[in-house]
Image (cartoon, rainbow over all chains, first blue to last red; front, top):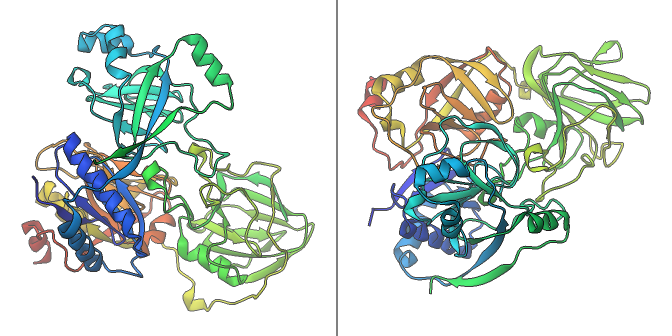
Length: 239
Length: 299
């Protein structure tokens, strides 16, 4: 196991690094530590962001200094960092119409048929390693190594909202239209940012997404149904 | 109440931003120049938390529809009330029929207008800061009304002349080095802290710098990690980009450091063509070992 490192991100955040290699295990440690931290309810903590192999703690520098935060985090890691914590996470079921503009390229690069791509992408809960790049853009990991294809050499100027893409055995969703370089295999009809809600997002890092295929009619009916809510399971993680 | 006749390049409502939603990929947003915005609120006796109007570069015309107290701070965008120069950094009362214009930058880049009790506008995730990409509010358009919560200031206050910043075209900001610093060539780190950079272009997301290209010892792939307002990324071609208030919350480019929070307003007010110098500012009890390049800079 890599030694844990503490590094400043400016004067109001500290990066706790669990290594440089992306793996399911490392990301599980990241999610575990984030939960552990949130549970402390320390008043100096402003926000805690989990990424692939790091947890970044944004702190209120008027309440705690950099060395102070570092020593608190270190103590917490020594005491509880390796103990299992039970936590409730969510598994969100997202419908996808597999009509992506890069399906051809993906079948070519992976040697998989469209049916096989759909099979490997659906019907299993995949972990969200982090959310970033765009509001609500999930980096969903743990897919087959057959999906390990690079991003587009030339990013598109505009990837439409709802596009579902893959790169490097990960899958991502564009909650808003944006420039981007993921290989687009499909589209979800679900609105991923709900502005009328107090909590506009369905998921955060540490949660799971289960994709499932829909046909064009189902896609349209979900798209038109303003009241559509994806199925969400609460599951106990870390048992 | 004010009516927007011309919104100029960009005029938005901003407050202290969304600081607790980065795990959803939501940028912090908020005012770019916290000092000036806080002063605008202070002059009217508002809490620092109240939203203000941020005007970028000018080209703005506003008509006063109902009498109101206002305060205007930040960069000097050559403001007028009717035919007269608009006094800044003090409480004013403007009257129905007055026309406020901001012609363009004389010094600085961004002006703040506060109204008594704050500004009425929708709130998303606990903040009124406009971030259009996620649909969190909209920039002002022609014909929009800008409403303060009150029309007269609760406790008008004043600011001493020495508390008013001078916005220059050449600034130095302090940088907390990143853990990727040692992946850059020593000569590039040295250049970064010794020679200045020119602002090529800037918006609320980021600021592109032009100058010496920073080179890395070797190109290694970096996994995306958290970034913040002030983080200096260096893409493969070597010209640094400073991430600002509306920047994405994660990034996969190597970083050389992050600008000290206290100094961010200087960058927010630096116009294109302005010159930026960096001063290395490691935090105390930093675990990162000082690289030999740093010693060579010191000597």
